[in-house]
Image 1: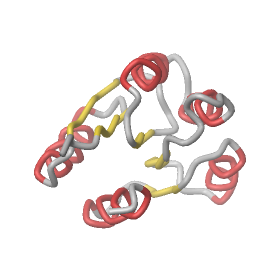
Image 2: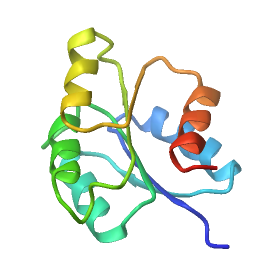
Image 3: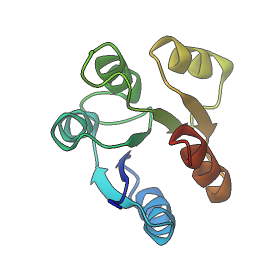
Image 4: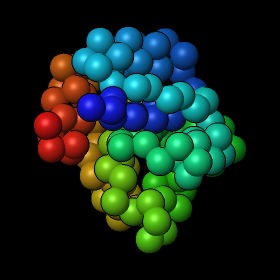
Length: 123
């Protein structure tokens, strides 16, 4: 069975590494992008099974990336988890408005992130 692909879009290298190591340990193939523009491009070319997306990103913010993907027929079915330091209600509401499937505030429990990924992938 092919590994499920997860795209992590975050400009904080330590967070990317922490999540990537855990996901690879769980058997996922992990793709990484360091800014919103790169993340959007990789989502379109790699067709990941799920995207873990930061809000505060260079070039395009996570809300814009999410909106571009969720309002495009070709990509709207890809689950998106917003993983962000912006923990205010307005940010969570905005995430819902742009189509995010889940919202997790930093600092986060890696186990909770894995559980949400498995839930959204139906595993």
